Length: 59
Image (tube, rainbow, N blue to C red; front, top):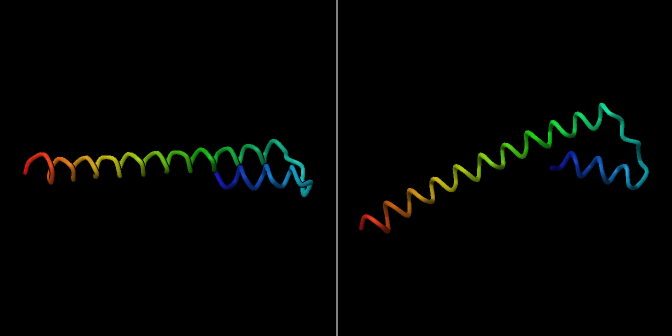
């Protein structure tokens, strides 16, 4: 998400103009970061569920 923020802010403030290559690179980086955040949310959700089951339900 940070690459999109940097690219958008830089364009808005007039530091540079966006090109197709820059948009492709920032889009790929944003996609990778979105997948990593989704994976982290899934892992933390599974761990929380296991903890809840082991410590609350079974006791």
